[in-house]
Amino acid sequence: RVDSFHSWKGEASGGTIETMFSMGDLDLGKDIRDPFLLNPKGSYTNEQKKLSSDVSKISKEKDLNAWSGPFVMAGANTRVVRRSEALLTELQKSYGNNFTYQEHAFHTSWFKALLSTLGLGLLGLTLITPLRKIIRSFLRKPGEGPSLEVQENGWFECKYLVESEDGQKSLYRMFGKGDPGYKLTAQFASESALCLLNEKDKLPGGQEYGGVLTTASGIGETLIFRLRNSGIGFEKIW
Image (tube, rainbow, N blue to C red; front, side, top):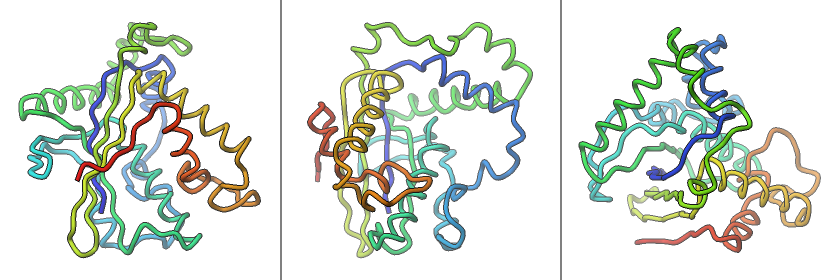
């Protein structure tokens, strides 16, 4: 089992904002809430599905001496991670039996977790009501982004609490400097493209492997190597 806890400083681009607000105009139905929406059929168990619902409450995290709450990007990220695991299982590179993954926002206090959760709830309410059309006009448009100062002074940190099948726990950390929603997104995309262009022989499934892949299943550790060399940190805490 892996639980990730995210903290960051940065601002959303106009394109990201447009995507969020446009979702309110789509008839996505109940499928959007399916934690295994992107998984191939038959690639998960009922037990995994029961343990993989999106986080919706504030919790005390004793292992981290911190608090957690809902994370704004979890609805997208978690589905991609679960698809990665399913595709890697097909390549005989499974993350483990009954692998589960959830994402949380990381907070240093209960009060900060409460404020963040209330803000996220307000955002969700806005996106599903006519208010979104009014508020949208005051926000960034596609093609607009944070200032250079915001991009340079931003940062992100992800802590990964990993529990193995025998109950042993480990904590890992991934971190970087720069606005995660803009500058670092461009960095990650660029490094991914360079992997596909220059290091085809190192891809997990080989050069002939294709389809609707993820970074983990389509690029793998080659991307981690490039990210390390470009300033993204990966380390084991304990």
